[in-house]
Length: 112
Image (cartoon, rainbow, N blue to C red; front, top):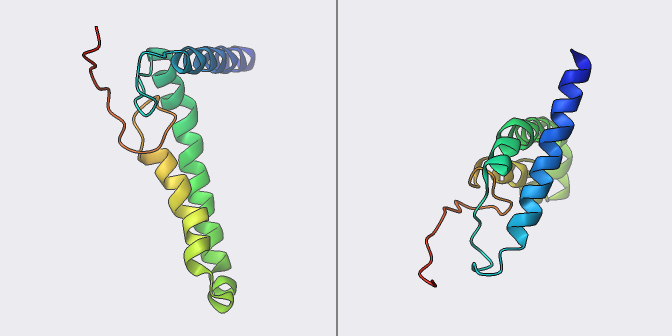
């Protein structure tokens, strides 16, 4: 059972990497538009989003623990940005399978 989980994780990771590399090779699209495939979306949903949510939660806890020190030093905003906002944005503010942050929706191009 353990071997099956590890093998599945490795296969999904390899498929995700191949999908991302193939997506980078689309020279007909604008640079800021992403068009993720099914493997990128599934890998993002199963692997990247849970890891991102965990990193955001750990960052929030670290921010609360470091708050007295960052308040005395005067860099509370920077600590909050790096520990909570940035991981949260990477987790929740991008389309499924996209690699860039922001609500990147699929856009149709009329360059046929």
